[in-house]
Image 1 (cartoon, rainbow, N blue to C red):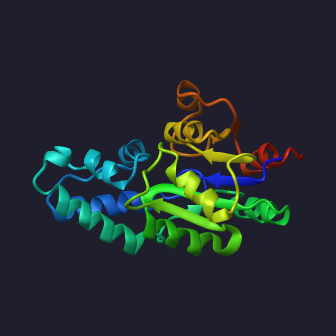
Image 2 (cartoon, rainbow, N blue to C red):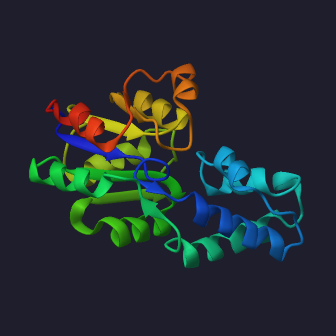
Length: 217
């Protein structure tokens, strides 16, 4: 049994894709850029929202309107991030069962910190003890900084903790932090993609994830 769980947010605990797509397209349309499909946005996520917008804006960072478009996305997404987002099936009971077992849960995300804290509070309340997002002075994933910051706030050492995510970035983050990684297969990347990027331990649903974390059936 692990004594703490560090969760990725998007694609792991929450299906945020529709709200992300709406925020991206609201910002793009405001600057006269073509909209992106849900599938395109799904392929763009994983390395933080600035990288998401670099991929979404024609010409990326070289576009003279990039900074303004990125700012508009942050405003739009902050306002609408709870409109269509939902926890994946079984996630809330999973978090309740972990809490009952005395296993604390934390969130680390490459999403900007205010949005991470807003989403964690709105959807999970006190089921999640700590939520850490991208902010100045803390390198984003796959650097291990956010993981170590979450563990510091939990008051726990890395030994005995596990990282749970849905992407290649999460696998690399766990490796950088020296933690085992459980990759969930319901998120934004396929199982084959995760295997190709070093994934070794998988959970296909919340019940299986609970078993992986606790060793129970």
